[in-house]
Length: 245
Image 1 (cartoon, rainbow, N blue to C red):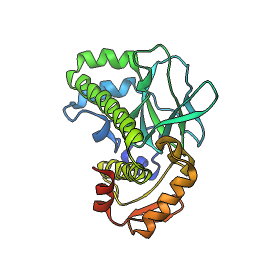
Image 2 (tube, helix red, strand yellow):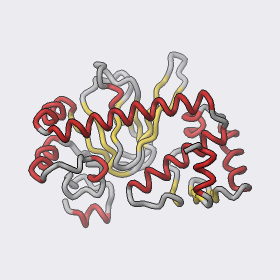
Image 3 (cartoon, rainbow, N blue to C red):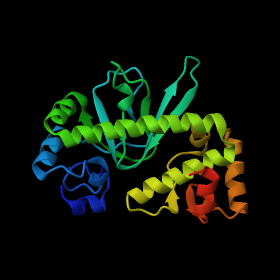
Image 4 (tube, rainbow, N blue to C red):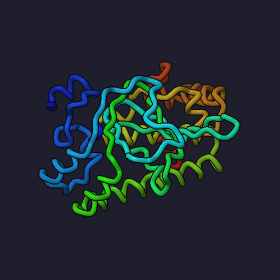
């Protein structure tokens, strides 16, 4: 659901013709218990548009809530803007992950979502998702699990921002990305950060200067090798220990 034929998807991860059965992200998005006919029923309600370019919005805060979304390729940033016009990053979403659930229980989206790089998404109309979830119990359970994970992530962020040092916060973010990459069968120690240092600082409640200093410190401590946005975790166990994970 987060990513036609499979070979086309291998050549172009942003290919809009991919269906749920072929998508290389379906193990993350879909309940493992879904039967092929159930996957087909889900696939029929999903909308896949053209690739999004960097800086392109999926939805703005205040827009009517109609759908949830799955990242097929690229990366998405969620954020809010307060009354003074100050942005607060609320999350980063990678392939195989669901976003847009901030509108559940509200008539409108509370957050905005924007593409951090060329990305492809699956749009899932929520009303049709609700109908299908009633008919397919495993899909409903899976959706509840996704919602629970989102709530847990929010709680962990609040705890991290209230207690942890700058080093612990950045270590936590890096280990989180490491785990999420490994879940996608990608390297958990070598990856490219899709977000800017400014976005990282905003998300973690740190200044850009502090983020840069911590990255430099981690390099000196031989925890990381950093080349702009390219990251290599050279001591994952020490980084996990610092992140208290």
